[in-house]
Length: 303
Ligand SMILES: [Zn+2]
Image (tube, rainbow, N blue to C red):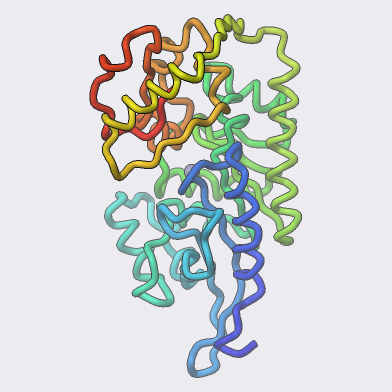
């Protein structure tokens, strides 16, 4: 391997991450993170053990190699000897481990990846996994859905403490972080992705098997095209000339429910929903005259 050649684990990481990023049931824009560990040669021909991890806020679907900064693995692993690190100090120490200090800032969850020994690690914020844990019986639901091999960790903010807790669970099949997501790993990049898909499929299957399902009180009635055109024109006026407006029917099931207002006002189901979807959504009552629509310049999703 020459210094100019892309290391195989990095190439595999980018390919795997694109596949994850393309599936919005696993992550929405910028959410989740992935990593791979391997070796690099420096300009003097010396070998270094490194970890590539997703850059903070970058999107897996479109990310290239530059979005996965390399960090000296030994420098990261030494941090496990601290009893505690506040976020600011942790970010400072992680930044010092960057192979190229000018590369993009690594994920806030970098140490979670570094403290686990596996070569390839996926961490996704899958809807099905969050659905398993977004209630008081989360630990049991995870055991029922995924089996005893998976560990359950109660909600806590990402950071040093969570990374240390996760490091102690390295002998499990994977970890579910309550109200947050899934962590799985493998020595093979393809198998790691397989494990992500398998765990999410098991969670989906379990959720589908539940007898208690929300009552779907649909009240669907499409607007005549002429009225829809008028509504879209009014919306466009409110959103501003530089915005592109399009209709998307994927949320029609929710929008058609009589209790849509209550659903939109309910708590967010995951950190991704809180950051990316909820603050940018609005519910418009189409029974009101289109001219009565208030200003929506700051919004991008309208149910
Ligand atoms: Zn996360």
